[in-house]
Length: 92
Image 1 (cartoon, rainbow, N blue to C red):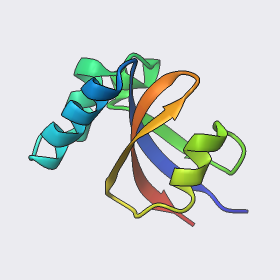
Image 2: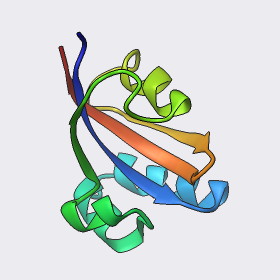
Image 3: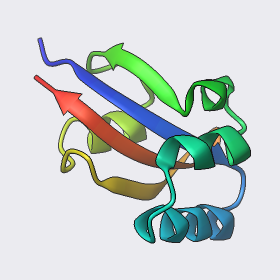
Image 4: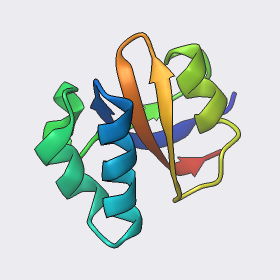
């Protein structure tokens, strides 16, 4: 079964999500931005979600995590929780 590790930043506004993505792409550290801005408890760990398989996260998340490019910031990804930036750190 496929497994992935990823980290994310969750915010409630698409424009803020886009602005944070631009900061990260401009050189800011993903984990630092997650600690400062993410509304998810994982933000305290730099957005780290650990390892998980397909179906353990919401569908919109899975679609990106199990098909997107590794070590690249993806998003905004809209879910029922808000807007996410995702970084897939590994996949097997």
